[in-house]
Amino acid sequence: MFAEPEFWVAVAFVILMGVFVYFGIHRTVLTTLDHRSNRIKAELDDARRLKDEAAKLLAEYKARHATAEREAEDIIASAKAEAERIASEAKTKMEDFVARRTKTAENKIALAEAQALADVRAAAANAAVTAASTILSQTVKGPIAEDLLAKGITEVREKLN
Image (cartoon, rainbow, N blue to C red):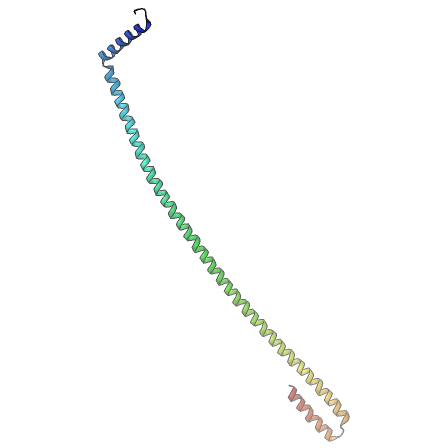
């Protein structure tokens, strides 16, 4: 038994434990372990507190994000409505402008037609008067012819103009 190395290791261990007990090292070790336990507990409490704060901040930022998204959607919707309103007004104004321009063009065309018709009538009247005076002057002779010719020319001019 004394030759066995395990026996001497056991004896040395018992002596070492006795020395530790005599000098109170076990109390120091236990105190150190208690301090370490308290420090770990405090770190865990801090970690929980930080986790709770982070969760609150996350919830707050999510709420802000949702609010910002709603505001952005509202802005987009109002911008679309404004753009549609402006486009509708522009379309209405353009239609009014085209209608006025069309009416002005039609009025100018009607005026030009009336002027052309008056010019054609005047030219026709002049041609008829000239033709009638030529025909009457060649067929009728004398003072009666001149009187008839003057009356006829006057009547033609009055009726054609």
